[in-house]
Image (tube, rainbow, N blue to C red):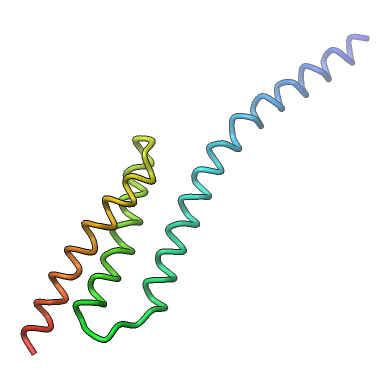
Length: 102
C-alpha cells in the first residue's frame, strides 16, 4: 500500500512540473516560430528599390527583436508591432539614403 502512495506522489509531482513547463515552452516556441517566419519572409521577397528592401528587412529584424524584448516583459505581440514599425521606418530611411547616392 505504501508503494502505491509513493507512486501517486511521484506521478503527482511529475504532473505538476509538466503543467508548468508547456506554457513556457509554448511561448518560446511561438516566439521562435514568429521570428523564423519573419526572417523567411524578409529574405524570400525581393523588392524593386533599396528603400523597399530596407523597409522590408528592417520590419523583419525590428519585429523579431521587439518580440524578444517584449517577451521579457510579457508583451511579445506589442513588442513585435512596435519593433516592426520602428524597423520599417529605420530600414526605409537607410534604403532611401542608399538610393539617393546612386
